[in-house]
Image (cartoon, rainbow, N blue to C red; front, side, top):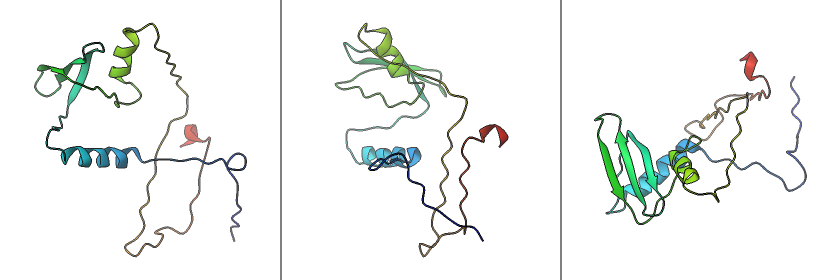
Amino acid sequence: MVQLTYQAYGKDNQAIYSVSRGGINMRLMDLAEQQPNVTLHFEERCDKLDRKTNELSFFNTSTNKTTDVKSDIVLGSDGAFSAVRTQMQFQSDRFDYQQFYIDAGYKELVIPAGPNGEHLIEKIVFIFGLVEAL
């Protein structure tokens, strides 16, 4: 028989708050699509950003065409290898940014509940620090 024990994370009042990247991306796109002045574009790579004029250049990887866009506001949410962050970093001597690579990877596991909200598996085993063995 397996005994489960409570193992607190960190010290009192500390917690890990996690948001599903896929879930938040889908929600943001759903909300954006509801706006009459928003158009979503896919397979577009940001190649250039002028942070003083808010002009951007996008390269479409399907059509091999470049499109220039001017915007009132630019939000960079393009992830760990952010083209927007890189462009902003090159255009300012006051940009403070560090990025470190680690040997271990990150995987997100989602096991949805059954139709009646029940658990679909009986035991959950978490394995930390064994990335190389998997």
